[in-house]
Image: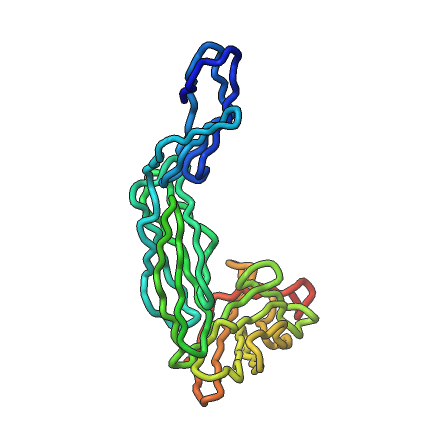
Amino acid sequence: MALTAAPTAAASVALTSSNTGVATVQSPVTVQAGATSATITVTAVAAGTATITASLNGASSQSPVLTVTGASLSAISLSTQSVVGGTALTGTATLTEAAPSGGAVVALSANDPGSVAANVTVPAGQSSATFAVTTKVVSAAANVTVTGSYGGATRTASLSVTPPTVATANFGVTGPTETETCTLTNGGNTINCTFNGSTSSAPGTITAWDWTYTVAKTFSQTTTGPILTNPSVDCSFVPPPPLPAETPWLNMTVTLTIHDSLGNVSAQAVDRGVRLIPQSGVCGF
């Protein structure tokens, strides 16, 4: 940075960057008495362009355009271009070159019925990273645009989300403390857990969720909504004590079949890995 004439006393020059997302500059900088120039420090932040402006005594001067090169986002790609609503897929963010020290944080977004995390980090020295894309069940075809931004570049990928063509049952089991672990409570009359079939899909409106759950005996319940909380049983549901020597729980199998308003019936979804723990004093345990 240079002045037109040397000041008789030290001069403080204000400096600004036109784009701090690309480059930043120290400010102010002091030009010593009798000198006409001073060294300034400009820090590159990301790829792009910026100009540096110096101001002193109401006058200002602008630098030539500063171009910062570096990694920027090259592409957003998806593992498939079309999915049935409710299906998850994988996206990939690819940079023009290896990510810098500390990694590159790529901002992400997607419109409904798609969903992504707010960002994905490409590790230092790597040029790409994957991220999860989830979709909702839809009643009509919809288009999703997945957008990524980094280093001044924005890239997109398109996804077609279609309605289901067959009824498909899908569910999860959660207990009071963790997934797929339930307790036999209420004197042996209920299982303290929740069966959630909300991720099931069908061409029509789902009208019935048929649940079965089995340990020593099979019990069943039909719900008009996707969630069954505290399923009903009795002590015949479990074998007599004690618990198996090799595990402190009993193995429980849960199934779900769904029906929709168009008469479609799904294949049975089965989870054989649920753990059932009887409370002390319940059904003889």
